Image 1 (cartoon, rainbow, N blue to C red):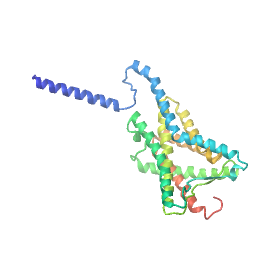
Image 2 (cartoon, rainbow, N blue to C red):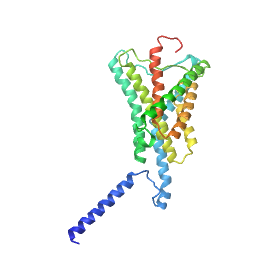
Image 3 (spheres, rainbow, N blue to C red):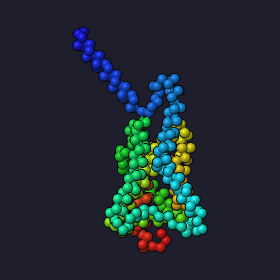
Image 4 (cartoon, rainbow, N blue to C red):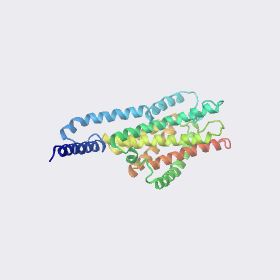
Length: 293
């Protein structure tokens, strides 16, 4: 074999080895079954600690932060000299009602932030596992099936939710929620739909797709992780009152169970979107016509 042939063969071997190493590095989580046992044993606690820190950071800048705010908000409401069901919780409020275009900028800003939080969660999952959207079922591979499931969930959970809300207000454990308080401008309905989409994507991607996956990486019992996720979901709805928290806790348990069974988050995103869309747009259209909203 000539020197040139030997050099070419050496380069090819090096290239193949580099490609194999690259594929191995990007194939999955940091620790795999092919890892050296001694290295895996020594590094596993560190990896778990880093995952725990990651979860705390993601929750601190997203829905965990909302949970803390909701607890403070409920304390403020409970310490007023007014019964809870005689207080009002306003959602989707105009920021500058006298300047519609500036108000529009505020509203777009309000629902871009939750989408950014969901994008961060997806990115971190992608770093850990690769193909994050497919991992949690947030893709269009089974769109029509997911749409049908989402609409069915919306019909059942949404109707029960409305009944529970009215009962909770009647029992004095919830505030009266005004779901849409934007001025009557041309972009009101699109913004309300955008807010519904942002809520559905951020809550289900973070609380189900991200959190349950990372708690599984920490070797949590799946049912304990499910309850933990649902408790956080209920907590960040405390700003509405006890009724909103209880209702969303139950919703979190149902959604979490369905996610664990289907391994797809998209049907639950769709269901959440339609429930919020009906609540926001329905309130905006019906509130001027009826006196019980």
